[in-house]
Length: 257
Image (cartoon, rainbow, N blue to C red):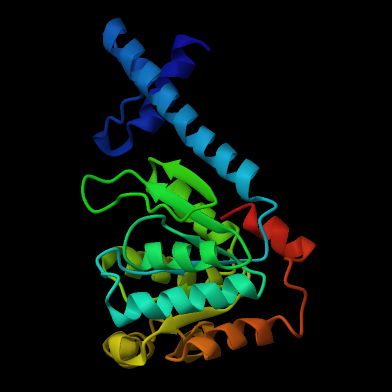
């Protein structure tokens, strides 16, 4: 490239007087090398997490991902209900996937572990709260939230969402967005506990639908249930009219989560 061409290119890049530096323009060679090495290694660790989850979970199906609070104690009725739901799903032939930690995650893994099918824990390194529960037939450890969240979605044939905090809300709304935008296939999404979720559901209906932020039909992406048997029956009923395995079109879609 001639000097004149470089000058023209720089003018385009610096339009409106904004200088947007690139890593290759760092003049301190030691700093540039350090940055490149660190970022390259970071990319490799991300790739490794995707590769491991693909290797270990691709043939684990059918599966249900269960979300919920890490702060719920074993004596809590929600813990006991999750234990029951997970055991029912496991005995019905579903692998159960959870975040691998305490609370609802522990109940989900324990119920599946004691049932007929596999229990999967997608564990995450956190400064607080997260400790791996012992009821995992398959245990995968993640450092990156987004790689873990892809695994939650990619290998699930249904989602069961128990009461929880920010993490649970994040996982729930991400599932809604993926299904709404067509980036993920339509599968059962079940909120457990009508009393707990009522405030959020009212807000979604009155505020988001009312202000035209979402369509009223978007609320049909999920169901709300209280009874354990109804949750399992709803998932089984959904797949009475279609193959539980994703179609080829759905498989292609899931490649671009």
